[in-house]
Length: 316
Image (cartoon, rainbow, N blue to C red; front, side, top):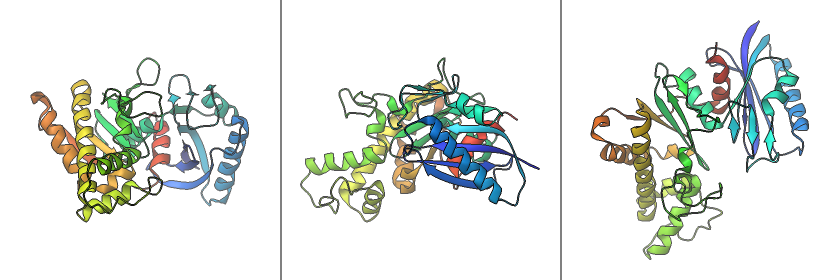
């Protein structure tokens, strides 16, 4: 019987799950809407019904040895989700214990960026590295920091929120309730906001000028930059420089071997990677110069599920 870890990634829209073996192979996978049920118990009933249904379809006989979960505002220490803004279940949700009631195996819960970092260590390009950072660049900005081989959790399980470092006093409003957080500038949403800031400042021609905010995507901005659009190019230069400056500060605290950039925004390629690396090197203290690599993630498929499952495989 094949031993597998059940990886679960709880997103604001969908939940994705998969059974992952020790080599990182995804033997079964599935998904369901996250926000369908008002009660967490009803959500978990449907989740495990779907998991069992997918396993029954497989020709491979499997034994689940543990459940790894990535979720917003998740605490590794308490196994709870705490006041996640993009989930229906408010307050403190004892997710790990509720899951354990349904399947009596080890259950590990952390936020999605920490799961991505562990996935990189177990199955991705960070194999053999004990000190590195993963920055997830999607709708927001997440971060997972590995120090001396272990994820950095802090005393309460919520350490490592690089996206909520304040980079502009009284800057852009953030979903966390504060102003000027990095993710309001460096994220897919941040890119869109920068485009409109630059369009308001400059009267020159841009193919982005007539696109409504609700229709604009970071991918469209990257494609426009590739065609030479000055506003689009300036947007990525501004975004990359801000990220590089903040990473130089984070390096001064953690001294990583490498920083991995992961997520949809990284599809911009050299538009993002090159100026981030240049700014980082420029802003680093001299003792760190020439030591830190900026690398794309080594996980291309089933990344969220692999990351969640790696929480279990890392403990084997």
